[in-house]
Amino acid sequence: MLSTVQAFFRQRAGMFFVLLAILFGFMGASEHYGFALFFLTDALGMFYLAVIWTCYTILCCHFINNLWTQPEYAFIYQTRIWPDHLRLGRYFLMALAFLQPILFYSFYLGDIARQDKLLHKIWPIFIFYILLSLTITLLAEWRIRNPQMFSSRTKSTTVWPFPRPVSWIYWSIEWLVREKGLTVLCCKTGAIGVVVCTLIYYQTDDYDIRLPAIGFSLAYLLNIGLSFEHFFWENGIWLWNRSLPVSASSRFSRIVLIHALLLMPETLIGLRYQVVSVSELTQLYGLGLASVLLFHACLYKNSRSLEDTLKPVLSGFFILTLLILYKVPVWGIAGAGLMGSYYVFTRYYSSTHIRPW
Image (tube, rainbow, N blue to C red; front, side, top):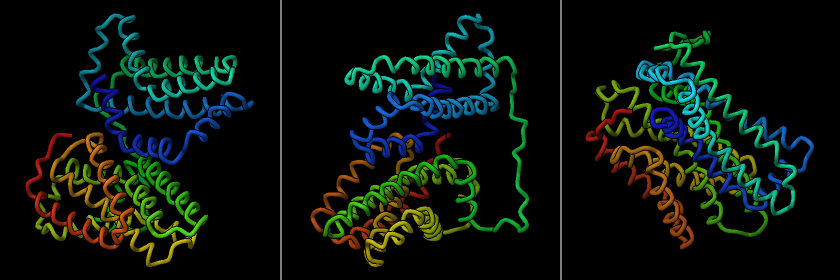
């Protein structure tokens, strides 16, 4: 549980943060109820539900298979000394822990089925859940019976007709896309969804800039998973870059440019809808950039896991919302955020204690 299940949820914290933000921030109770009725009543509802759950199970199996081939996980093969029934039973409990999101949603479907008197429609989910749990259990048993103390597979590489740019910024973004592609996809999907809904709602009446400021701020803050992964890349993997003769100001400017590029997709959506003016969109972009940079700079002050930073982020978003509602200029908040992030970064960067990841 500690070495495998907890590692899975810790490493996929950014992905789960975005999914939770979409499911409980972007979608309301009526949308959840509509999806539940679709799964319970449509002829293909259970089929689509099984496909979604199977994709999640494949993600879990892929994680286990890769994790247990790492050298530091050689101890896991000592579980072969357990009796077969004990080992399979513990693997099954591990599978149940991996499938916690599915279990919780099953409870929600059961509650909806009870309210709408559709309990006779819910029996397939028990079969799905047992089969998916057995899939993870058998995968773990197969991995143990076929030990691989280190990963000898080489990743397939694409030969580009041009050399890779010698660029700090390019290397950082390339690592995010290549190694954390699922997190990038989920972050961008959630952020773009929030931006689109904000713009659609904004054009229904004569609102001022405060409404899009709150909506865009939430959308930009959904990228903190990417910001955290970039921090992990520079301070947990690419350690030798800290010994390069580069000033803190230059490092901060590079971090600003990297985050500016990461926040560009959802900003371009605002240009496409042409609901807010270019000057207003520039202020919103600066506000989002300042918010994410302040989060990134605070990681150097106190290096923690992403789960531990969610509460301060939510508190900061609440304070930001109050400032916007009390008509504090958006450009003023953005400027103060940028200066604050620069101050925090330059003060705490050199004193950052690198923790083992």
